Figure 1 (cartoon, rainbow, N blue to C red):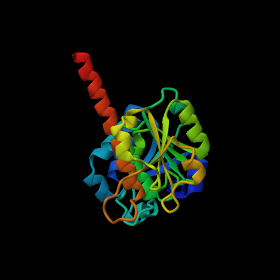
Figure 2 (tube, one colour):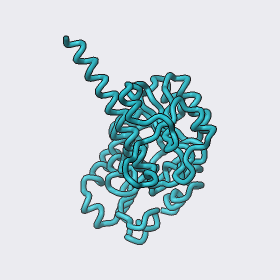
Figure 3 (cartoon, one colour):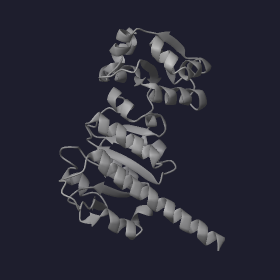
Figure 4 (cartoon, rainbow, N blue to C red):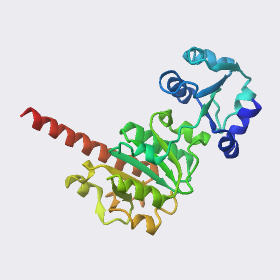
Length: 273
């Protein structure tokens, strides 16, 4: 327990290469990964008696994966939680991040770059959205929040375990590598001259794309936004001043995903003619 409690702090996660997955959905995805693709990636599983009874499939999955299950008190479970309402289910997992060169060995069609993102809830929600639209990776660049922060892991609802995560790169280096791999760089920027719908109508969103999203309060630095192929704004006919980062990311990523699917459908129909 003592070593696991240290993982609630960034220094503990950095020193050990481990982190805590909390809640039934995150733990279920962690155990599924250990069972199917990365054996040994879950080290221990803690749960209160009530939570283990409520989510009876999880102890069974842990046993199948050879993961030790430890019954703990509500107080002990709360000590492992970084959230206000602990759910009594926590697993100790190995970090998932990979290097960008590994991601680009077979360049994906869609990549998300989070530049100086600080809010863990936003970051986790973007991870979940990226997973939902089939993105190939999420890059946490610059001084971004730790993706293994407990709130970020929980907000990702298990999606952290589904796609490659890249950490620790400078924003400029990540953009340069993605461009060299053949991806266009689109910067979400409320002051952008290009509108999302215009790019979609022109077929631009069907191309391999890296979307860059900036800090919640300050947006993208001029040096980053200016290095993009396009600075893209989302049309807002209502009275809101701006969109939440996670909402803006969801709109942009869905638009790219839809464009790719439509292009693939047109190609398939062309083959059948």
